[in-house]
Image 1 (cartoon, rainbow, N blue to C red):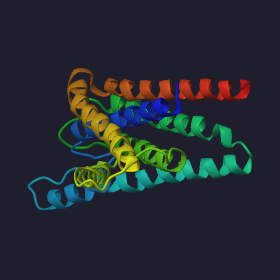
Image 2: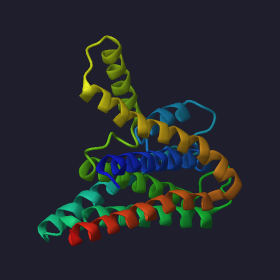
Image 3: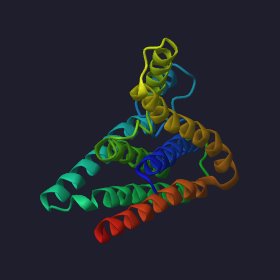
Length: 233
């Protein structure tokens, strides 16, 4: 696989994963946004003036959980730097995300069926989902800087529109075209993941998280083979 194809595969896989997990959390857990974490503050504000604010605490708790997910990835990469094991950073950070997503699924299954009020288990489930996506966000920013953000689409949409205007006005160049494609793949994948997730949850409940778990397992396998090829070359 060429470097360009690998980067495109990463962008599509991780963008789909982020859109999928974010929508599943929203549908399953009282409108919780696990990937677009600051959006929860808008939902909190809306809940406080509506008839029901039962899920406000869950949305508050998601923020520190998201931060802990980010911190865990950074601490792990620093530890591997100190151990001179930088070659393991991608594999172990993907593995950490995988553990958090599996925990998200398992606790969600135990907490099911989710009623009209969030239980303690449902809140823990939401925090695990937020921590998983915090880890995802930190992983892509720290270790995949060649990709456009895979979970924060507002910046990607802004960039792609600016670049398209540049190209239409004749001021764009090859780098501008490259940025358009770089932003396009995660946007498209995020949108597809978001569209698919709600239907999958309605059919399979929290078992639907096997889809993003499978994506991470596949990425982990690809990284392992890439490392083996690098060692042999």
